[in-house]
Length: 152
Ligand SMILES: [Zn+2]
Image 1 (cartoon, rainbow, N blue to C red):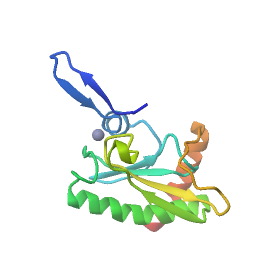
Image 2: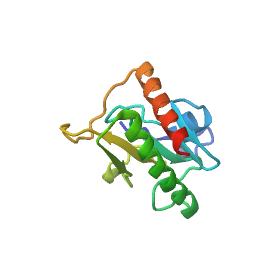
Image 3: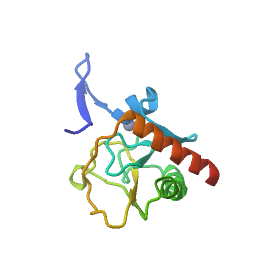
Image 4: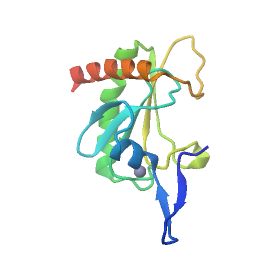
């Protein structure tokens, strides 16, 4: 099921509901790693590997086709540092940096976000989501935060 749903407001106009804008950025639900004026980073709630981090703009942009250049570049700079932090924190052998644009490209949340995914030699590469407990999620997010602080 897509996390991006359309709602009809009381005045009958369609409004877009964005789970990142509402739950993550406004209500602060999740495990957070990094934040500055334009960018926020947090754990993917359904990771493909433990340590799967997302980086997103605080302002709503749908994907690469509408994001501001300056915000886009800031996200890429953070991604470069975050990749090292995730690599160290998870003791991974490699990192995937990925970003999907459009439903047919497997974009599920229609708010620009970039994935940082740790990968391990001998593990089959796939995109299946794993369930993780809040306790484990908090533990890995703390490890990544500590490594990131060292690099910033
Ligand atoms: Zn949004």
